[in-house]
Image (cartoon, rainbow, N blue to C red; front, side, top):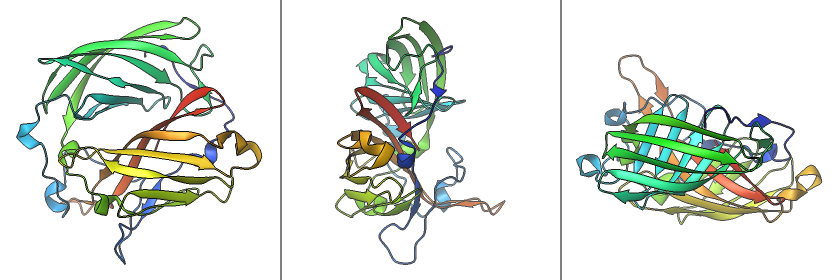
Length: 275
């Protein structure tokens, strides 16, 4: 989406831009997000089950990264392309033929933003090729609601973090940022933001136990003041876990963290959020 950037503007949704974490359901354990993750390293020291697809990766499913862009694909081909520079997301489902992929997708600006031409929505197509567990090369073309068109080619590399297995017991815990929410061992999600009055109720569910990707959905309610537009908004998307990291040479450590990639329709516009 070169040339189409999200422009920040005043957001009523800032109270729902959360995520740090504490606890995995066991006493005495603490977590935090916001510390750097080093792709592909440290799993041997993490004490976390990172067995999964491994050499058996046979689909475009995976976490794929290049500078400033992450592509998250589940085993059925559902994907989210996240651009860190503007927080926008492209959302769709890949069609696969051999090692070729193609898709039509919808593009959403970050909460409280528009694309650079003032559009609140965009649509696009992509095509490309992949080597399972290694590389993903795609070219996309996107057109905003106001008619601005751009395209880009992206070369991405597979991240072994995807091959960590998923577990509701591992993802359960109490999470904090601007407010607190909890995930139970059964996957029930609940929380409340004292700043906005917003409550959230939903679920976290496993997509494929062999891989580190979860479905997340929740509904906002009881929001007050400028956040009343969030009442009834249904958030949905992916989540994944970065396990405990320890580098034995430098002593660097990073606790486990939960990361979420979502979209929701608010006031007739669909926005993206990731944290």
